[in-house]
Structure formats: C-alpha cells, structure tokens
Length: 247
Image (tube, rainbow, N blue to C red; front, side, top):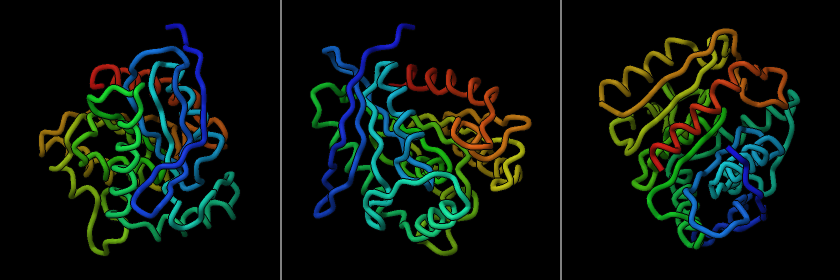
C-alpha cells in the first residue's frame, strides 16, 4: 500500500481543568479517517511513540498520543537508561485507573471534534505500561479495537487500586483485543499470559494472543536493546489487520 503524506502537530486535550499534552498525526489529504490512540511506555511520549503515531498516519489513520503522565510530570519524555526506567516506574505506580480512563475518554472526545475523524469508534495501541492501559480502557464504549503490547501487571495489578487486577475488567471489554507478548519477557511470566488468554476466552471477548519465541520486553521498539526485528515485523501487519477490520 502506498503510504500517505502526513502532517503532525502538538496539541492540548482538555479534561476538565487538566490540559493534557498530545502529539497528533494525520494524512494531509482531504477526507475522513479512522482514529487510533497510541499509549506510551513508561518513558513518556518520546521519539519511539511519536514514530509509531506517524506510522499510523501514513497508513491512513488520525493518530494521537496523549501524555498519560500529565498529572505527574508535564512534558516528561526520556530514553531507556536504568535511571529513566526507575523514574518511569515510579510515575507508573502513582497512576490511578479512574484517571487513566478519564484521560483516554477525553482523548476520544477530542478526536471526535476533528472533522477528519470517522465517528464510528476508535482503536488503541499501547506498549509496556501503555499495553496495560489499553487493556484497561478497552472497557470504554467507543473503543472498538485494542492492540496491547507486553502490558505488564494486567493479571495481578490495577493502577491505584490495591488488591485488584485489571484482568478482572475483561468482561466489560467492548471490542476486539489483540495481545502481543515475548516468551523471554522477564516482566511478564507466561503463567500471567495464560491467565489473560483464559479470561478473554471465558468471557467470549473477540481476541488473539500472540507469543513470540526469543522476544523480550520491549521487542517492538527499535530504539531499545531488546528490539526483535522478526517479532516486530510480524506484529505490525497483525495490528493493521485488526484496525482495518474493526474501524
């Protein structure tokens, strides 16, 4: 498929009194396009997340990456050093499920103000902590397709809610969910992947779960040492297939 010319913009998403920074990318040509929300890793809306956002725009989507750490550290963006991982995890542990749901709903509301966006539902894709967040927000009514990449903690943790797990929200998922995991991911034991897959099956959620041999946490990010080109190149067409069929 020929890739489209695109334009990008730094925007602000209003959520009550909160102004959420966002990175927006869309085709330059006229018309209406399906929308995709790209949810960051613990490292903020950095170069990798912006690159993924642009990749979707080139494929014919209006794509937006909201800053989900806006409440904690506006403008936070970092690389992949041990120090960056430490602060990114600290912020992750301060997030709350209700605020994440609210901020993603505000992002959907923003998208629906754009004349270029089809108003037939939204897709989400998230990586690392973002993979957890998109599983959580798949319960929102307008989310029709979800691509969750190596979302740690889904099976045993829910942001800001001690003793609860995001996997327990599975019955409320509204659309189709694809989940992608590396079999060598030290952050996500395969037993937890089994739990997630079982929950999706038990509650009849349309889904596919992909497990990649030799792939570690962060395998999709070509700016990390854990990048696995074979797994990443296999996963990307599957994501496009999901969004094409559901949006």
